[in-house]
Amino acid sequence: MELNIIKHSTATSPRPPVDEADRRLLAAIQHGLPLTPRPYAEIGAQLGVSEEQVIARLAYLKEAGVIRRFGVVVRHHELGYASNAMVVWDVPEEQVTELGRCIADFDFITLCYRRPRRLPQWRYNLYCMIHGKNREEVLAHLEWMVNHCGLQTLPHEVLFSRRRFKQRGAIYTLPAETDGC
Image 1 (cartoon, rainbow, N blue to C red):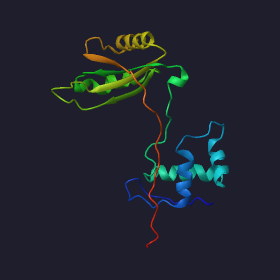
Image 2: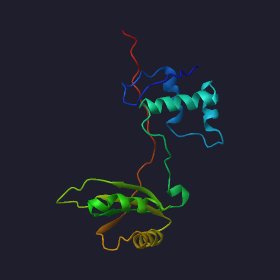
Image 3: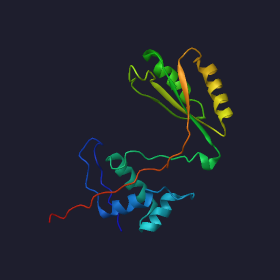
Image 4: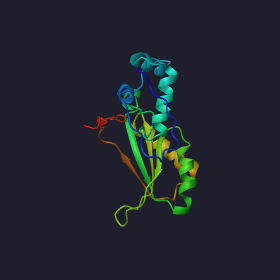
């Protein structure tokens, strides 16, 4: 198998065709990278290409927009973090960026993002996720964060998870390219 390395000018260009080698590469990564010191070398060995070719082709597919995000899916329960809370904040618009940066600096924050308000039903515009081994730990993190970032007067709600849904990365099901028939 050969992975074509094609330079593509920008991610905003039309999406390039995905060939059979790309499909095999996407299938090899869609359930996660191997937990080895050199995961790209292992994938390359499976596909019959070099580690450098795998890395270059993944970079190309990312730049071309075929892969939209390449990141880590953390399975918190398996790591002993059984309590999770989404904390939603009603933050004055002129303070969202500053407070969002302060909140996002904590190691126990895994997500921090801004969303538009949905008035009159939903007034919250800043969200963050706190993980802990139990509820007491999550609430202690929250109290520390509130005091550190000066959030004492901001309306907020703490929404603890009650059920865990399946966590996974992207699944690539690409339509087969037609051969003109």
